[in-house]
Amino acid sequence: MRKSTHNTRVLALSAMFTALGVAILYLGCFIEVMELTVAAVASLLILLSVIEMGKGKATLIWLATSILAFLLLPTKFIALEYAFFIGSYPLAKAIAERYSRLPSWIIKIVFVNLAL
Image (cartoon, rainbow, N blue to C red; front, side):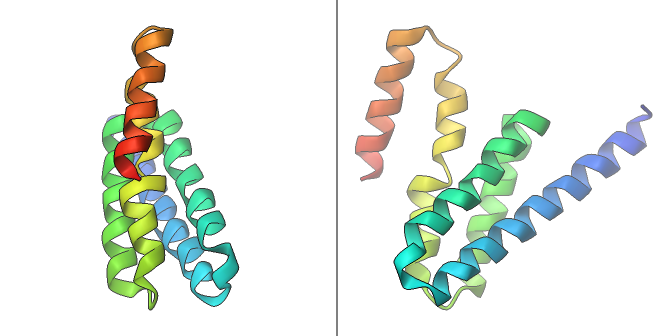
């Protein structure tokens, strides 16, 4: 695959994941009972982008989705949940899984406790 074709594919996927993440988070503004659920579903897009494009691009997608959620969503609580805990967990998990089993578990538990 040519370099320009690969860059175009990565850019298109990043834009789609970001837009879809914001759209999913926007659904949580209408159904208040499902705030945590829509944030978790939106974080699955970050997990898919880690698998498809790597941690660097996934971090940028998470950051762009978080900023757009803060700017566009009428309910900022969902944007806070996504930006500081649920959306960033797939990135922390990908970083932690580079280590062996015990350090990986310790890093994940520390991340969850710090996020709460």
